[in-house]
Image (cartoon, rainbow, N blue to C red; front, side, top):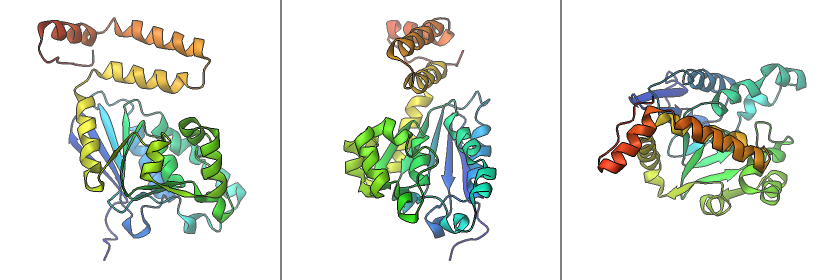
Length: 261
């Protein structure tokens, strides 16, 4: 029997540098209701000024990352109620997280669940994971970036196929089309994500933040404008203590000690 008193979102800090955010609604395959979305937004808002944090791992459980929005929650509401929820503000809290975010995906990442995963920067998935935007099959359409982030990730024709048919694809196909960053056995998903987070935790945080910002801001800019963003970000990093430490450590053949300064 499920523990109804268990929190629906679990926040863990295995180290100062790494945070783990886990959706915990196994009885409904981690469907995203409003309380869960608000809790996720509150947690991610707290990361903005967290100078000790280096990487976030966002995950569900072994059966499901998040199997979409909670249909029971949405079935009876109308357009005005949907508007007044301002879900875009809740999603934005995840999208603007300054630290790298890794989605560790087992099982289903469907509808809002796939949109949630696409708010991350890297997706690590198990071979048994399933991905899709099946909203059209219940009379609606993706509304949290499914038509836009998916198109930017896999291109117009694959995005059209997934959104217009509601087809659910396996992890191998998602990896082949560029939707998944790394594919691993199902029982190694979380460990692989944590290993990647640990690697990033040892890297210079200002460089990580600049890389993330330039990639995200540059994807919708012209090539010349995006290249200018890249150059300016690189030039800023030449003013950091971490740049001096990294290059000295390389020359001295020793591990660097980055401080985020």
